[in-house]
Length: 302
Ligand code: FAD
Image (cartoon, rainbow, N blue to C red; front, side):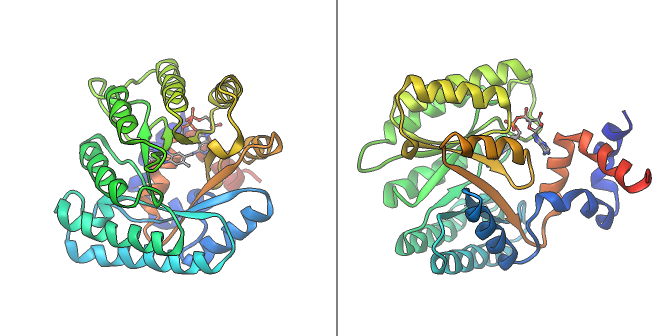
């Protein structure tokens, strides 16, 4: 009970306190911290996707920081011999302020990724962003099909229709690349499924759809039930490991991660870094209030 209450209070607690709870989810403040984490993951059999933290800006002048961060990350990652992609949040590129401005800034990043042989993943944010983020992907995918990917959230009621759209953009020459996740934002029942069983059922149906259309999927989950379901689907479709990958968040369920790698599947870990870690961390901690309780115990009960 107490940890649930604290988890709800997180946005109102001093940042220093939240940092105590958050640091296992964040690789550090600097790009070099993320690269160090990526090298470490590589040595343990996993790939990475690095994410410069930041979202919901209020002025277009702030876009330059997000764009420069991604461009710098791509340059540095291209110098390391690692399979690492970049993930970005379009709201930090001004999605909700000016779509065309956002498109041009993200395009610059994706174009550079293309020149360096890298890939950029467009994260999916709350339901007010979905149409715009899919449109961003549609346009960039048409121009740079192998250098950009998108995220689909199975908790959204609209997702089955969105998947049909994505499948129509997919071909051998223009492969669609999807990260499939449950979805992390607080949405109303009108927009999203709320029950765990319903979301899990939708997730496996979405995964089946994507596999049946030959689309590369980043299976992003820490849910053992879904991991087992994915194993079954991979076997039923007779897929080889280069047709999908599993994905997990930095600091979450490392044992399950090791198990999946041990079974011969590819694994990519989402590695966030940057000064703007507060929003990201409070979402993660609200998602797993028990951890708040464990940390409080470790801090106070000695
Ligand atoms: P859950 O049922 O939530 O979790 C299963 C188990 O995993 C839990 O029982 C617990 O043991 C463990 N676990 C889960 N979360 C935590 C945690 N924070 N700390 C410790 N243990 C935990 N969502 C979006 O809306 N947009 C995105 O772009 C997006 N990108 C993502 C990228 C990756 C690589 C991953 C893995 C997730 C991403 N998500 C994104 C979040 C996702 O939508 C879910 O909210 C999140 O993954 C939790 O769902 P789950 O499938 O792991 O299942």
